[in-house]
Image 1 (spheres, helix red, strand yellow):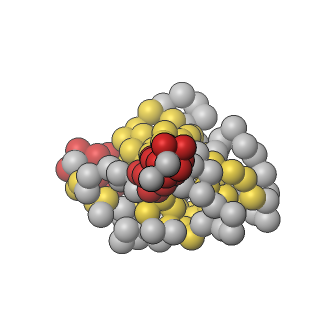
Image 2 (cartoon, helix red, strand yellow):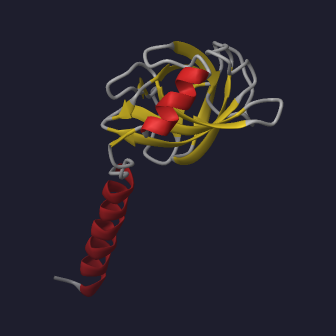
Amino acid sequence: MQPALKLCLTASALALTACVTVGKQKPPAPQTCTPETLALMKKLGVEPGQQGSMNLEASQPGGTHDYGVFRPGQITSRLETTVGSLPVGTLVDGVLWMDTGKVQAQYTQAHTPDGQNHPVCLVLGSPAPGGVYAEAGTTPGSLTLPKSVPFTVVEKFE
């Protein structure tokens, strides 16, 4: 094989390997919310099964029909609906990733507009295991999604 062709094939194989590696993002390990977190959520009226909507990225405001491009990793979303004692505008911190065409997020911390912080267990979409389907044009590193998305309160992450 010619040296230049061998070099091109090697570079192509490395590029494809990088793309496959990026596409297989490792989600957080499944975990159950601690009894303390569940008790605190209950005190706040935030019960497993409750649902609402949120602005997926607090720094990218938009309406229910707007779309944005998001990156996997840490994310801060903003509640658009009240859930229990967590009012509209509460920021929730979580981790966003893509798994076989579905975008997942797990949220573990809420920051209310009045400055209080509370542990929570929320997922993007509906429960078990949650998630929303990515839009056309999505790649593993650039997730095209609606800016306004549903969330569900859970007692464990699956």
